[in-house]
Length: 104
Image: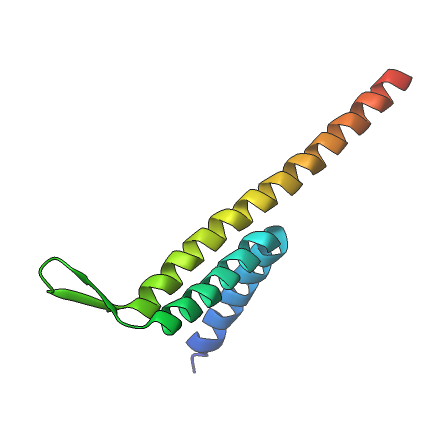
């Protein structure tokens, strides 16, 4: 008798493992994206309405457009913060290496 893995639990393990690695390595990017999504959705909810493209053939609710836009802005802001912290860590490592090489 063949033993089959539960595809849902396998997928859940893969997603949580991958997402855990992403959120640990880039915490500000994750926070910025989630905050941007939340603030964008809230703003879209406050103003309401819809956004039309073309001659009205494509209509999107403002809440969805604002959420995606806010998420993108938050993501870019978070990436900038993560990049700054990464560069400062690299600078400290280089300075420590230079100090140890000067002592030798």
